Length: 443
Image (cartoon, rainbow, N blue to C red; front, side):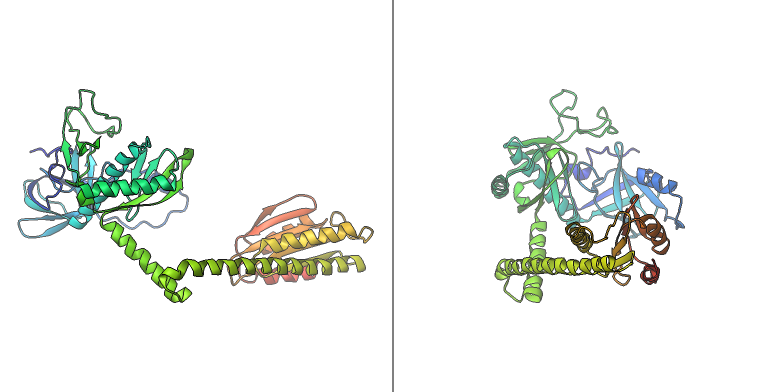
């Protein structure tokens, strides 16, 4: 007994079948193909203790209403019910060349008559997204914008276009697609001869034997005709709605236009509305429609705060630089340091700049960070776990950096001669105290 080839499965002939009687052709232990990631993990020097994997089984059925992953559409899920009324979960459905394999935790004896049930909520959702993508791509074709690829996500999907599309065109396409949904264009599937050359088979997987398989062509009214193995709706009205979202730039100037269809539109709207309610009620104390105005006011205040902080930071850096300059110019002190708990690299840059200005404008002061005095600037703290940075300027730079690397385990950096700059991933407990002890006694 042989199974029906992928391309002529019951789910492909009638995508609205929810239950189906069939029989088991074979059942064998399933060994997943090794991926490149699996190989990489094997080569890792430090291996975690592996827990034994539960044995899986690949059940081949005479025919099936559970679609195997393909054409950008994820696999169906469902159940296999045995004559004993035992129900076995189908965790995934895969295509092995021309054969659909149902992955389960239990084997099923060949010849067993079984009843299949599809996870209908999952199936109808996938059909809405997939058919919606066909319709969306068909409309973009009228703008000479070919769909290069597409991906179905758990909530948001995308099509990849050859270029970024203007907001006006996106809105126009969104309206056109929704109009075509309302029109209820008929959707049909045909299986023409693939050997006549009239069908583009360039996207057919290499392991699918065209001489034994079946090419399916999905037609949407008179608008679009495309080869596709997936399950589809019978009318565009069943898509219900489509919403085009944002775009993201990808390689080669391409653009990914994100979208969702069907019940996902309503789910997404509910999610976004809940977010707005939480933000407006819990954080902004306003009505939803007042959120933009409130956020604009917050941004304005934030910019003012940033400006004030920048001014204060510059003043603080100038004060610290003046203290160091005074110590170096009025005493025999050859080493000093500036420390700030906040991990803000701008402060270190400002302090260095202010000190350089003082040195350049006070020639003859005796302060020289190239062959006389050494200054260490560093920041960050242990409790925050954010790390920090270090900059050493002066003739003792190499000596200081060597000692600091002994005391700060996560210090990485480099330099030569009279300068060193490093980044601290994080401080370990006691390291800052150790650095202080060293610097305070350095001469």
